[in-house]
Length: 228
Ligand code: SAH
Image 1 (cartoon, protein in one colour):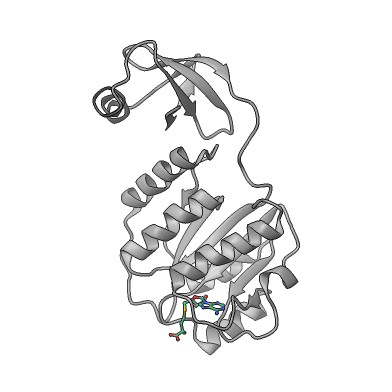
Image 2 (image 1 turned 180 degrees about the horizontal axis):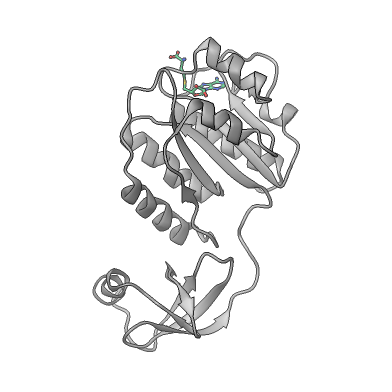
């Protein structure tokens, strides 16, 4: 069944004009056909199309949300690669993306609206019950304060030899990952992060591209949480 993210109120799903157009002209569905709707509150329903929107018919029990609220602090990287992280990270179960600028970042532009579209479509496709948020671009020092506040902060770093996600991560209600840009973190940034309580981990002896590192680290952490 096709899934849509839409506000639900008064027993109805308020599908947008763009969604209604897609439903009619691309999916070729009409009145009486059923779609699934989730509104980001954690609930999901089967809804019946009826012209201006859809009527909620019955709720679909259960959830697909991970037990850990996982935030990925991702350094800004080339737009297509950053967008890949948003899409794959949403499929895996990341709850919040926080873009940041660190010393070796070469890309600086934020594309808030496009990013929101990407996470929304990935959430619809992958069966998420929420749409992950994409925060405003932060500085590295803001990230350090935020990442370690009340949650284990794990920082993949290619200079780490001993620790791995599996060896340092213990499941927690909130978790953070901090992944660097194409050029990596400077030694000073690694020191600062450690001073704030972040724990560096290795993702193997090969150097991964930033977007690969983000996807792999999220996979390992969610696996350690029993989610994958
Ligand atoms: N400084 C490196 C590449 C950085 S890779 C260079 O230019 O040679 C980009 C980011 O991916 C890093 O900041 C780190 O967070 C992560 N990363 C890549 N490979 C990794 C590995 N083997 N172990 C841990 N983290 C890794």
